[in-house]
Amino acid sequence: DIVMTQSPDSLAVSLGERATINCKSSQSVLYSSNNKDYLAWYQQKPGQPPKLLIYWASSRESGVPDRFSGSGSGTDFTLTISSLQAEDVAVYYCQQYYSTPYTFGQGTKLEIK
Amino acid sequence: QVQLVESGGGVVQPGRSLRLSCAASGFTFSTYGMHWVRQAPGKGLEWVALISYDESNKYYADSVKGRFTISRDNSKNTLYLQMNSLRVEDTAIYYCAKHRDGMDDWGQGTTVTVSS
Image (cartoon, each protein chain N blue to C red):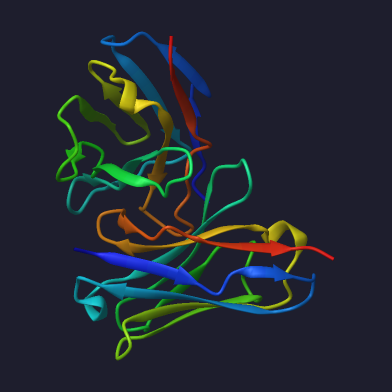
């Protein structure tokens, strides 16, 4: 199984500042035949289901604000929120969909400083 | 718009069975793979199972393999999860999610509590 490890476990950032969450996979999730990384990022607010933010490691889902961006390839990935807004308080998860079981990271709790 | 509505959750004793349903609308259900994902109280997300659009392929987490069965009825636009031999550790919110470059749409979830 591919193990997904996020860092940090929690993060406090001031409004308007940059937030960065890292995700590392135990093996590459880059599929060589199409050069795509099978990595997604989700946002989950309290009492709500997760919401897809980023897929293919860096493609933003329709309707997601452009302050959210994803980067990285192979085994190391980053979710960046360029200017933190109050509504971004949530838990963020990375997930690989390269192979089953489709494992998630443990989550990163993002709060306002 | 896409709607996924789970049902069938409840309180059940260890060793008993439960069947969850997920009613889909707003998209062509028969052309998408579907997932079940669960979240234990205060914990992170755990992928449970995936079924292909035509039911030809099914995949399970090791934690549920042999006890849970994912299925679908494309004529009813409904996804199912048959859960047998339930354990206390199966207590969670169970979400269904549509497969598209990850999981692009999720239901609100149904709560399963396994307790004696």
